[in-house]
Length: 368
Image (cartoon, rainbow, N blue to C red; front, side, top):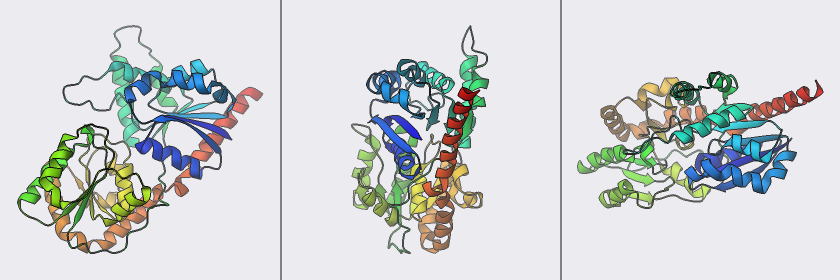
């Protein structure tokens, strides 16, 4: 099949998904990408630009895939393509939290709604995400004061399903059995408010004040000019920080993950969890909130040890891991083995089968 993948925000998990899909699919997938910046403008205007520049190509392909940071309804109308379209939702603007002091912008939620209605299939990256979207969409439509599109919610949900994205572990080597003289804690999430770095650093400052042994790797992308929590952490934890900032090379990123003993998340928004999955595959012990998609991606047998319900429990379990990290080699290996199920080699068949079914259904409509 000749598939075009339109990605208006080519960075982070969006980039990870597109690159892996292209590499492992048996179909020809042609990317149309825009850089990962100005996300609000991407939602507003990317469809206009893509239709203008690539409309002819879109009209000639067998299937189009887009993600959530574009208006698929605008793209479909302006490019006038007739092939099936898939909307893959990494996130959605109805449930995405807003920074303190900012109000949600309703037009972004409407963009996700009309994109979902314009798609032939809506794919969600976790059961958690689909359930949250289902509830939020119902509330969003109920808030419309008059001339309510009564069938919109049912139509969207009828064509929605969960399909876990794959991760390309080809560059990630299984870590050897290392006994770091000091436990190494890694942060490999975006440097953004929805990952709550202030909660993470609050725990580290307590440990630092008690002069406990640990070192820190601060990885992850930074889209801010002045990430104040990280700047403050660099001043307070300076000698303990072995790496500060994003690394472009996958090889270097994988090398840092192989150094780590513990990966911590304090997020209030996470629909899948690429960063945590990558770390766990490299035999890093997780410490994750018992919410969002984390209980879904971490096997149930590890929930009691590695999920926490409160900041007090986070502190307690982090201290336990700092003491016990050397004694958990078998646990690391068992988690890594379970996480290998997210390798693209294991996931790609479901995607390719879906693509072929959609193309066959289209052909069947034309024949009939």
